[in-house]
Amino acid sequence: MSETIHVPALARVEGEGGLYIGVKDGSVKEIRVDIYEPPRFFEGFLRGRFLQDVPDITARICGICPVAYQMSAVRALENALGVSTSREVRELRNLFYCGEWIESHVLHIFMLQGPDLTGHESALSLAAVAPDVVKTALRMKKIGNQLLKVIGGRSVHPVNTCVGGFYSWPDATELRALIPELEWGLAEAIKAVAWAKDLPYPELEVDYEFVAMHRTDEYAILDGDILSSRQGVLPEADFETHYLEQHVQRSNALHSYTAEGKPYLVGPLARLNLNHATLGELASRALKEAGIQLPLRNPYKSLLARAIETVEVFERAIRLIGAYAPTGLSTLDLTLKAGSGAAGSEAPRGLLYHRYQLDANGLVEVAKIVPPTAQNLGRMEADLWLMAPQLLAMPHEEATLTAEHLLRAYDPCISCATHFLKLKVYDAEG
Image 1 (cartoon, one colour):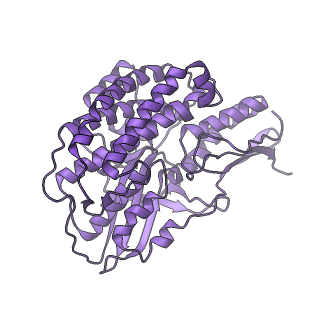
Image 2: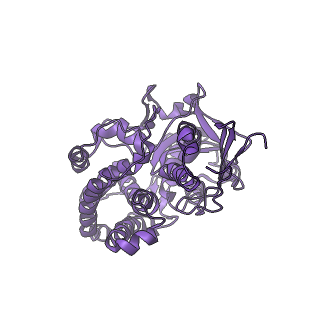
Image 3: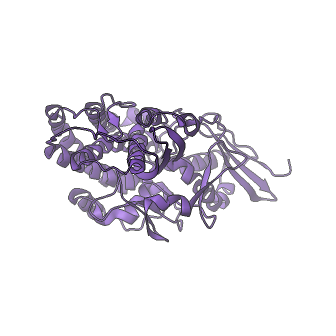
């Protein structure tokens, strides 16, 4: 492998960053995932804003998963006020989240990581030889977008979410009109699991600490406790006691570690390994029929976990729409008071944690947001260290693609841009 590998702009991830591998005397001495995008200061400019402004502002953090930011935000703010929403609101939020998972998971499976595993440089080259695969993926993704639009008012940065519920109930007729497409999508999602299980995943087994939201009665997406494969069940309000953010000089994104200073993993692998017992009937059957042996510890097989989860959310969306019959007001009549509250939910890429402190007028005094990609950055670097001997033994182009693929398997959401990686291998003394 030559001394320098340079990828100036890698598509198929969200954001901009760089990877640097330092080599001395034939061995790797340094690995850094550098995030050089300017900081966006959301936590700073939320201070002084009224609590009902927060869902609309935080939705702008990401164009792929705005619902995740809204759901963690409204739940944390409701906890700060000490209020609980109705069962109807919770189920509609759950359905709302299904739409986001559908569009995000399908995008990643077929358009982002899928081309890596099928030997294509992009979804466009995949479409040239398998147009039906890409057309099916686009139709599946569109179903998720339609669900977001009906509930949220629009598919990108939806505007119907508020602290206490929704500004209005979506039209039941419009929701039920989506059921035929959802049923078609469910059938295609089941086929996608069978397709995904036979893909040529690179070999890499890692002893992860898995961390995800957890419930005993359903596959956790919207709410629950926090479950760690090593620490057990933790209340979501205790998240910051066990998982700490650190600033690293090379990055404008914070890195997260356990209180013991170890990296950990959030996202599809963590969720499936920890929560597979609560999958719905069809997702459980797809998991069993695919012959998938848990736990999955190969980061490349995040795609396989996403495929199982895609069955789960199609199945759940159909059930929730079938039961949709809201009564009463769509939102609570809030009484403002000072307080602090925290909450987590499962963005498509992993656990997303918010904490807010409010004054007596409902103005934000403190905001803390811990996105899933920030939690996984330390783990990405640790995985690259494990792969370093393989990279050094590979030809230049193969090493580049292998490193890119590993990071892309995480589906990192560094920002809403489309370029991520500059990979450079250099001599540590020069």
